[in-house]
Length: 93
Image 1 (cartoon, rainbow, N blue to C red):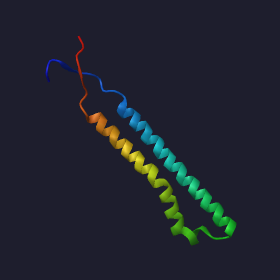
Image 2 (image 1 turned 120 degrees about the vertical axis):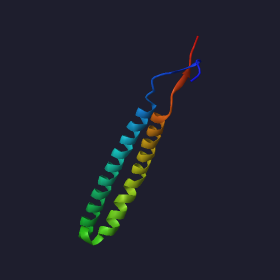
Image 3 (image 1 turned 90 degrees about the vertical axis):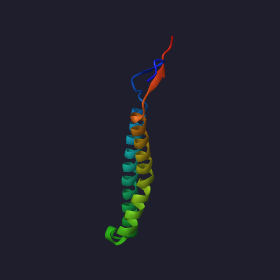
Image 4 (image 1 turned 180 degrees about the horizontal axis):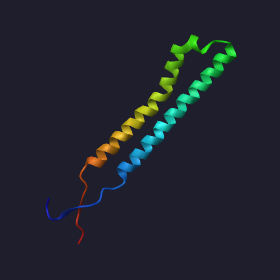
């Protein structure tokens, strides 16, 4: 390291991305539960057993949850990368 740069404490940038990742994961769980309840209500109103429409039900639930989990994983990865980056700052005179 040169003498005009010094190490400083890492910022909370990675923590912010971790928090956003958790929020997206919670939204994904909520979307999955909401999708399941909606499908259960629809199946009940048509008089269809849930086991008869299991494949389309699983597809619908996974497709509603996948974007949130995907973005959550991306945000977590950004947080990990930010945490591993060296943080240096120029010394002010």
